[in-house]
Length: 403
Image 1 (spheres, helix red, strand yellow):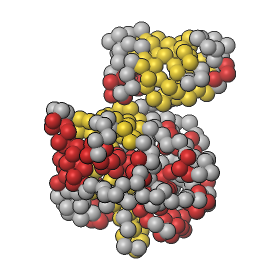
Image 2 (image 1 turned 90 degrees about the horizontal axis):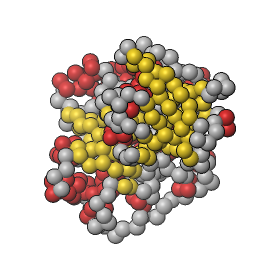
Image 3 (image 1 turned 90 degrees about the vertical axis):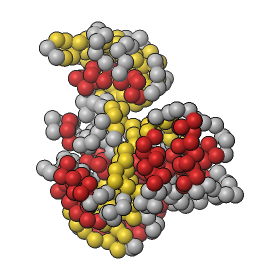
């Protein structure tokens, strides 16, 4: 397909500061829910979600778990150095593996107050852990790429335990506040299980065990994917040509059972969150790569879906190719990365509906929403503002059906 010209000004709107939810509600499922279907908008409570989803729905959610990715150190001079974990680089780039490492690890990071940190200088932190103390060391080994090596003095303790014991919750920058104790549990979905995200898949924050029970009682099916959300999700678009925006790469892990479930229910897939959308659609394009014999690596570049092709395979053929490959290679799980960029002009291959929060103006996520709603995205967001919906990560929810 030909890539359309995108004028970012068409995807801006005014978001007053007071509309940004700075804290979560007392109850997860007490949030408002905007329902959009066939051009009609209704305003409900999130507890109505089981009533709005057809009984044959396959609900796909992202089970990634947020790690306390913000590590704070102090130099001997007293200067505070803040290290934000972005992507692991050594001894592996696979997030689940590096989280279980019990020896030195290297991460690409963002560094606050980096000018105060000398090349090669070792920073020390004392971490209380199960009745004893662990000494965590951080060494800046490459200033240009912001690579930091972490070591600790207890080889029985995995890196994930070190981070959990010492790090701060990586709240989105637009909240403009320090994390508090409440954030440890509330900036996390109730079904999170795979450590590695540095931002929450916030559409899932509204779900509770009671909501899941009602969904299951209705017969609604579930499947899990894992996409470890990166800090790039907050990166604003600055490029004059939108397609020049450097899309963030995020790790995907999907098991064979999920691929099989989707193949059985291709017409009824509803994604919980934009991260699930990105994963499901990326998997379609991975199947295309397999069918086109363009390699077996799960790696979707941002504009791969927009390459000109005479014929595209069906969703069934694409996911069938993935399943066949997994069986042939005796794989229970496939893993890789995606930079997929979904903007108006894209045609969804898998997802029929989306549960999501309300996103920042001029962002990659608002472009994704506009791809679902067309020009109606402005009406939807206008009504949300007029009806006092709470916006962004701790804000209210919506159920949107693709036009």
